[in-house]
Amino acid sequence: MPALAGANVIYGLGMLELGITYDFAQLVIDNEIAKAIKYAVRGIRVSEADMAIDVMRDVGIGGEFVSHMHTFQNFRENQFDTRLFDHHMRETWEAAGGKSLYERAREEAIHILETHEPERLPENTEKIFKEVIAEAEEELGV
Image 1 (cartoon, helix red, strand yellow):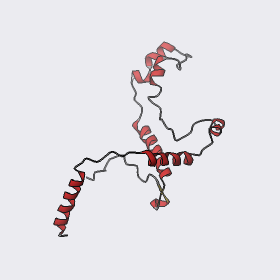
Image 2 (cartoon, one colour):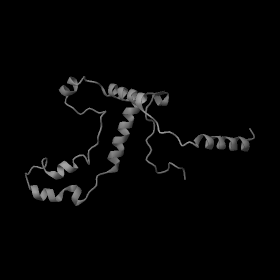
Image 3 (cartoon, rainbow, N blue to C red):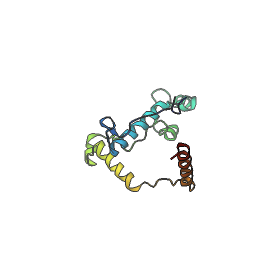
Image 4 (tube, helix red, strand yellow):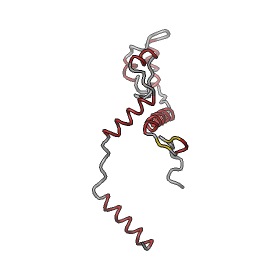
């Protein structure tokens, strides 16, 4: 069975024009969409505690839940966090500069390219690569 069989694979992030063109800003946008999809597919836990059954009983019909401690402790639990998509009203968005999704994504892509420090590979990686290449060359008679 192939290694990716049954895996949750999202393909084509950052690609434009059937993969002929690659755009880092589009990659940032697509990554955010992929995170949202994974968040939605994850589903919502359903238990008495998660559903706040006791809180509903305490607050009662017509009561107010926003100031309840349970709401404060759990309101981020089922919330998709995104810095890229702007959910503000138009006036607030315009006052903050009115940047489009693509502009924000491009700025984020530039920030990542300028500041990201990749994890270093283990020290023996080069040795392992050379061994694999030597073995393949020997096997192929190169």
